[in-house]
Image (cartoon, rainbow, N blue to C red; front, side, top):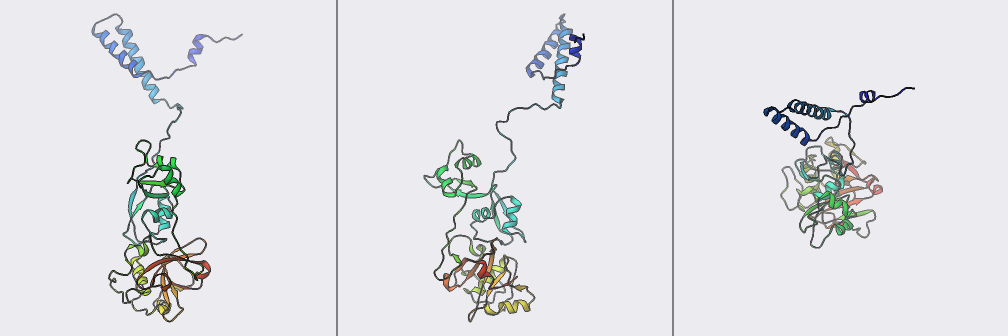
Length: 326
């Protein structure tokens, strides 16, 4: 019958638990004092000190993983708002993909209208997560803010570190996954069109309802649709001709000047409506997934008239009826 002796058991088992720091320090001091006093236990104390030191070093270099419960999972996620300066070729969807947030988050945080195009050199606030940037009003709570934006109160508190400070009036907070309701009206007699004449940065913030002076090269009458289309395209780094005449001749002159002209809308293209004595032009701000398009324009008599910039959504079916200068 075989048996396992204590010696054999010791030979197959190695304990590699780190001693406490106090034990290592205390033993080292005891060994030093014993040696200085020439005590009989000096040799034993010194051996113990060396053993504990070696044991501590071995434990620290051991590759065995010790599993411990995690109360808070560490993260490197940056929860601060950054400022980004746009470059030529940037679009709202492209930036949304770059920063892993929704396109609407960028639009809402910067007061932009429903657009995909943005001019170079513009400074944009970029949130760390998708949602709304909200300034707290008197009487608001995390719960009321969450309800207003279809978010979650606990997430609002966590993302903004409000566990101790609470929600304070005037504070600027992030509402994660919050949704902003756009105020759009549908004018009578214009099926398929929605217009927004207020709120949002129509025209990208450079054109203020046609009241500012025209840029160099703009030979169109101020306050008209052609004047606005020229300015908006110049702002986007996509200039158009200075002498294309009334809106209904823009497509012809653009094609003659080498521009691509077709029936396929794209963000930044000029929409040309050739109907009527003068025609009408606007700028495509966004092409939605369902084919609807969002345009900005000036001097549309149905949405404010002369010298007024508005934005409207045109259904995919109606959008196919226009020409587009790219």
